[in-house]
Image (cartoon, rainbow, N blue to C red; front, side, top):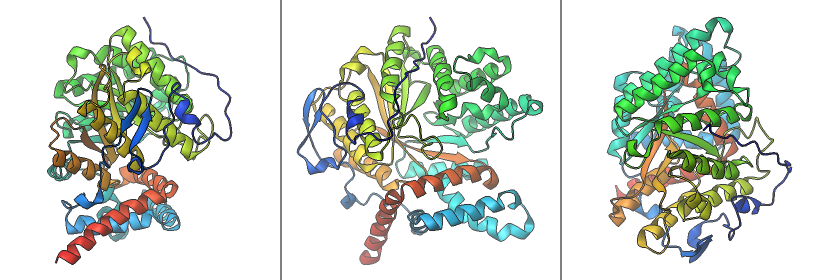
Length: 462
């Protein structure tokens, strides 16, 4: 039986009421997107659940394990990110120098970029650099990393003559990531990164991976290598023109590799990325959960808000508030025993967000179900959190410290997503982070303020 791919035809409203998204996954009491500690209870479809506490209180000093050098670099990076004009200017300068960074005359500039942007957001290039960075994260309590090889093949660069080489380069990058990863870590795959072969197929909504033998072989080679080492795979989101085929391909791959008997710590080999800013996201998840049940595999879910708002204004919620409520509404259904989740198959959830309200909401739901005051879906196999390297460290560390404070042995693990590669290979990745910060300068200010609070504590203490 082939996986079904839904293609919903919905009118695209230019604006959406701020609470409309919370009803997109079925009828249930609305979740208002605000700090949950402002209330004593919140509504879920299963009924009201109590608010136990804020999971990331700043009084536990989430950044106390960071060195002075890391704090000062973070203060610089978050201060730049909190200022859209500064971020835009810095990005333009770096992009202008991208092709010339290896020239001896620009060695000082490259050193400056390496010691700031690159070291803050990336893992490194050599095995020694990457291992040292990962060790530093683990010493802080981070469970593992999500490694992404930064080298990209863009449509403009891909040609028929480079088709085979592009696939081979992509596979080699995947193998590098698997080689640097440790059991329990993840690698992130962007299917379009395999070059023109993948791009040509992905643009056709009805395409199948097995239509290109070499590409299919490359994908399965990557999956088998990861499985043999105990490394998991996250499939990155793509532009909407490609996403339908990505979803179809990944569902077929999950049917092959995500057998319940092969899970490790409740987590399957493959997870797909679901973008809550897309209007179809709730219904797509509902459909995929049903397919997973019918075909007997575990649906791996990485839930994000979305990364292409600036380039794809259609088919998405018209306001940030609507996206927020859609994201939180989906969390409600996946974590609190909603009927849609119960009707579907087994699934794991990675909560990938830098939004404090969503983190607090998810953590509270987990605490409530653990305490017996709420019901955890029987088919939910695992829950984890993830944030980008160099961003939202106060949330990542806050979750870790709050779990340690409670003595929770089964608390969700926290991962960091980070790129690796040379400085030049990482430039496009760094520019995407810069664009995200321009679009969410308030979040950068939260990061900066958390760093400042830890610095002030050390100054006063000393």
